[in-house]
Length: 282
Image 1 (tube, rainbow, N blue to C red):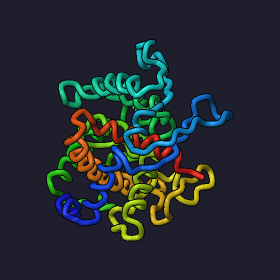
Image 2 (cartoon, rainbow, N blue to C red; image 1 turned 180 degrees about the vertical axis):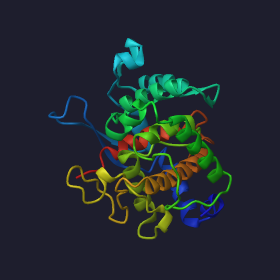
Image 3 (cartoon, rainbow, N blue to C red; image 1 turned 135 degrees about the horizontal axis):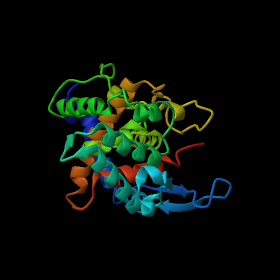
Image 4 (cartoon, rainbow, N blue to C red; image 1 turned 90 degrees about the vertical axis):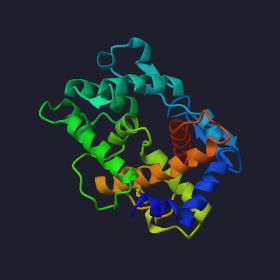
């Protein structure tokens, strides 16, 4: 599969056109936001566009002050708060657009993991192991994704060394300009839109894999998407393939939106999907 084949597929074109229209209108959704803790009822906003989901974005994060070295950014909730923290983390990882210092890279990655609530298990281990090179992994990600964008064939069973999960994809979205976070919320929001727009006529490559802890049939936190969208089961190949397809969708959607709204970014689209995906559950 190559990018040009995807871009010429009529179902892909139909999907992109519909999502770009939904940014401004034609998207009816009840957006639930938990503002006051787990045991209190959510605030519900009836929205008519994807753009409204972006405007209601909230993400309460907490970062260890000794990692961040900035008490002003240790906690936040707004989109702007998050962008400040992620900008700082990106600067630590990439100096002059080159991966240079392993210690700095790992510190920036720890900040991102703590911001995203994924500083645990394997993610934590790789950022604290002096013998493990994140710089090597990140360079492989950059090379592989740039090759895909340049026309390299890619498949869901491709081999690569770097990790691909909901945590590391948050890092890749910063070191690559045209790459989105692919976690449980963004993935189910895209799956929801794909099914809503294409119905039963969904090409195999658009049958995204959903990060495993939130896949169809998971009793812990089941997301309401068609069973054609299978879980990743923590398979990094499935995860990166679906991440790549999602990137390509939103890159083209963004091009269309920017014809009317020049200031919109890929982060805005990602944030809107994050909010929508939070609510696609039983």
